[in-house]
Length: 301
Ligand code: AMP
Image (tube, rainbow, N blue to C red; front, side, top):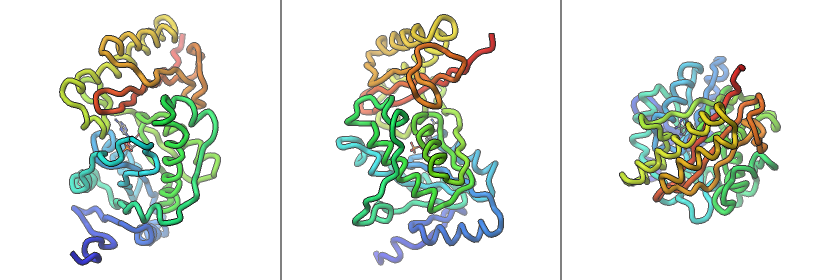
C-alpha cells in the first residue's frame, strides 16, 4: 500500500480524528487553544476497558477538547517484560474512544516518539520511584523514568490544561504529580478512583493474560486490600498487612510487594497516622503481573 495512504496525517473514525504526528496534532490543538478551549489529556497504552473510559468520561465532562494518547511505550517495559505480547486492538480502541466523546487520538509510531539518537530523559529521583518497586529488575526507577519521559513528551505535544490518571497506578500518579510540580508543567493532574470488575478485580489490560483459574485466583488481591483496610481501622496497620497476607496465602499468591506507605510521599509508615495511607500490592498471577492498592483515609474518632 502507498505509505501516504497507510499513514495519513489524520483520519477520522466515528468523529475521532487520529493523529500519527505531533506537528499535525499541535496545529489542530493550537486552533482550539486560541479559541480559549480547555484541553484534557488522557494518556493510555490502549486495549481500553472501563477504567480508561472513566478517565475519558471525566475529561469529556470537564474539558472542551479531549485528547487520548494511544501508545505502548517501550521505554517503560523492562527486559523480559511483556512489551511484545502487550494486548493491542486499535480499531476497537478508536470505536470506544469515539463513543466516549474523544475528539483527538494521538497514536504515534515508536520511531516518531523515539527517533534515532534519542538521548534525553526525565527522571524523578529518590523515594518516590525507589519504593514499592519490588523486583528492581522488573519495575523500579528505570520503569518510572520511561513513564515520566513519555508523559513529559505528551505534555509538551498536547499542552493540556488537565491530565487524567488512575489511582490503580498509585505510584505512577504520585511520580507524575511530582514531575509536573518540580518542572512547572502548567497542567492540573487529576487522579480518579480505580474501576473494578463486579468481583473486585481491578480492571487492567493485562487481565487479558489470565486463564479462568488464574482469573478467579486474582480476586484475592482486592480481597486482601479490603481485609487490610478493615483490620487497619479495627485493630492496627500491621494487623491489616497480616490480614492481607493471609488472603494472598490462601490463594497461593506470593506478592512481589505488599506495602503500607504514606499516600503522597510513599515513605514507609508503621501505623495509621491521621494522613491517607496507601496499601499497595504487586503479584504475579499466572501469566500476568498485577498491581492494586487501597487508600486508607483517616477516620474521625
Ligand atoms: P494504561 O493503559 O494501563 O497505561 O492506563 C492508562 C491510564 O488508565 C492510567 O492513568 C491508569 O492508571 C488508568 N487505569 C488503568 N486501569 C484503571 C482502572 N482499573 N481504574 C481506573 N483507572 C485505570
